[in-house]
Image (cartoon, rainbow, N blue to C red; front, top):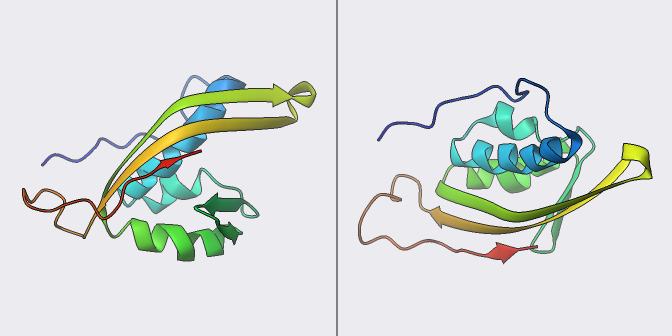
Length: 124
């Protein structure tokens, strides 16, 4: 199977504020799906906090341990949709919501016909 072509983390021309925020979500999940640590890292600051299913990881090292190191070893497909973004305080603060669907298979098993996904979830 052909791999997904790699694009740089910073796209040209520069993205608008709203598009740049959505791109952060896309870089995060594509980094997981392609085991691309640099792309995944580009979606976080070094002091980021990442919360999924009630588990909170603070700082990029913890996000790596609790998310990237676990998920990137799996065969995964992540879809992010219904993104809504509100930019407030003259562009200084923003909030976003999205729905996501994830399919996780044991590493090397995602293309086998009788395999079932490890779990799928819709997150907000």
